[in-house]
Amino acid sequence: MVEWSKFKPAVPRSWLMGLAGIVWGAVGVMLCRLALGWLQAAGGREKILLLGLGAVLAVGMYLAAFSRLVGKNLARIENMPAKGCVFAFQPLKSYIIIVFMILLGVGLRRSVLPRPLLAVVYTTIGGALILGAVKYWRRTLLG
Image (spheres, rainbow, N blue to C red):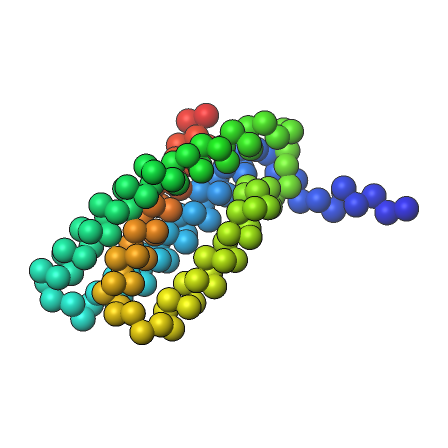
């Protein structure tokens, strides 16, 4: 019989925390880049207003939801064995939510919604993800 556990890509817990931060940060930066691209056509005042709104909403979303989610995820990782599967940096439920969010993002980009409005939504989510990534990195680096 084949011993499947030897094929499991196991890494230390600190790597899982760091990997979660990298993924959250990369997706956050990608969303913010898309938002900035959509705002290039906006006027100076409008651009600043929309970016400021997105930034304020990002902090609010981080404090209301993402900070708790990161905290729960960090606690879950800390309670794992010394080494865990590299894909365990997120629970299974989160992977399902990620697929839903990708599909929602595709739908929003193909919708008739004005790009400046989408820029606020993308800045909000992207900024909250970046703030969450910082929390992962702090725990990874500071313990």
